[in-house]
Length: 237
Image (cartoon, rainbow, N blue to C red; front, side, top):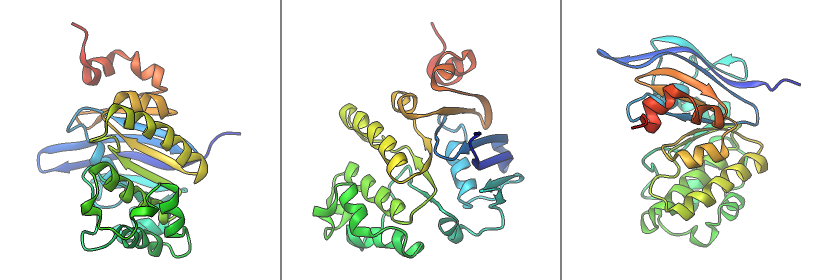
């Protein structure tokens, strides 16, 4: 049985003045997949996330979720549609405890996940009454992830979750992302510069360069694609 395309980014373009951040980009994420979205700095990866979550409106094209357009949904309604995200730079409510940050996610879709249960799952229950600002950066990223999970999403967008992590922590993160997908029955779209992580967890990978999609395929296909090697992984000497 064919997998259902949960997310469809269809011929999306987004310009900022004379800069073309996305140029007729199309890709899908099918139900239950972990999909990597990679490319050099400025390739358009975070812009794509911002279009999907309605922070930006595309100049052309459409974004569909469960077969229905997202372009009529305001940014505040995206989480009710079943989409949650983390950010490249951690975005937490500074005046709230860890628990209250996670409660925000749970309240966004009432009754989806109990905040305390999510905190146990991500091993943060012991710091639930502390301010996130007192915690190491890697732990703050887990708080942000817990807040996203508490909303009970179908689609989870992870924007550079390995940033600031050690090699050992990245290895653990890869296993954790796979477990997240299985335990919460998620579809995951992953933007990440750490190629080892992407290639170890993704079912499929889409590659952007200067706002255009230049390749898609399995991790092994992407690693051997000449255009990707030249544009992103580095041309051979």
